[in-house]
Amino acid sequence: MGLKTEVKIDQTAPSPPLSPAPPPMPSISISYRISDSADITGRIRERLVDYFGAEQIFRDVQSIPLGIDFRDNINTELDNCQVMVVVIGPTWLSVEDTDGDRRLEHPDDWVRREIETALNRGIPVIPVLLGNARLPKAEELPESLQALAYRNSTTARADPDFDPDMARLIKSLEAVLAEPSSTASTPNNLPRSGAVEFVGRETDLNNLHTQLHQSDCVAITALGGMGHW
Image (cartoon, rainbow, N blue to C red; front, side, top):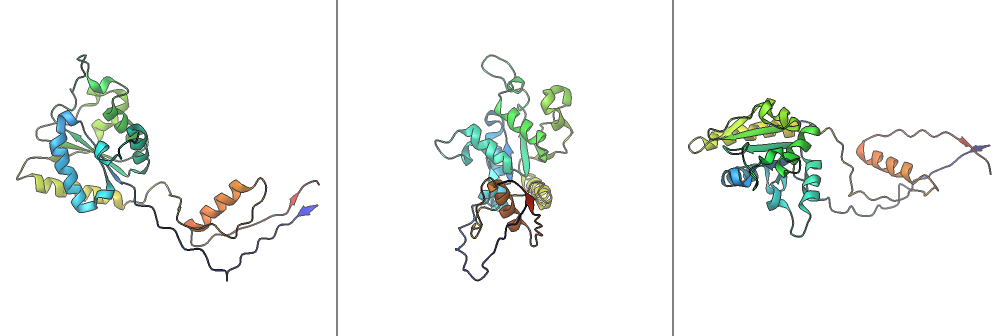
C-alpha cells in the first residue's frame, strides 16, 4: 500500500521576526611565542585590527573570555579560521622548556598544536619573519610541521619598513579572505515554522530546513513508500 504524505505551507501566515545574527567569527588567527615576539605581535595585531576590525582577529589569551577553557576556545576559533599568520622571531625555533628541551619537540606544545591543526585542515598559513629571522628548514621542524618550511613568507621589520611590510601582509590576507570558503555555514538566525513533525524523520526535516535557507531555489521530490500496518 502506498503511503502518501501531503505538506501544506501557509504562505499568508506572518513569519516570526528573525533573531539577531550572531557576531562574525574571527577569520584571521595569529600564532606566536610570547617569549619570542610578544611586543611586535601586539603591534601587528593592532594594524590588522585597524584594517579588518577586532572581531576578525584572534590572538590567543587576549581573545579568550575569562573562565573559559583555552584549549576548547582555540579549537573553536580554528574551526572558523580562514588564514593563520605565524609570527617567527629570532628564538621561535630554539625556545626551550625548564628541562632544556626544545619546546617544539613536545606534542602538547600549543604553538606546535595550533600550527599542526591549521596545516592538517588545509588552512592557508602565512609565516611572518621578524627582523633577521629566517624561515626554518624542514629538517629543523617536527615532521608534523615540516610543511611550514615551504610556505611563502613575508617580513615585519622595524621602522621605517614596518608600514610597507604591513601593507604587503594586508594585501595577502585580503586575497585569501576573498576566496570562497570551502565549508558552508548553517544559518542559525532563521525561524523554523510550519514544519510537520514525523516520527523518526527529524534528521531529514533538519537537513531540508538547512537546505531551504542555503539556496535561492530548492527542488523537492517525494515518492510514496511501502509499509505494513
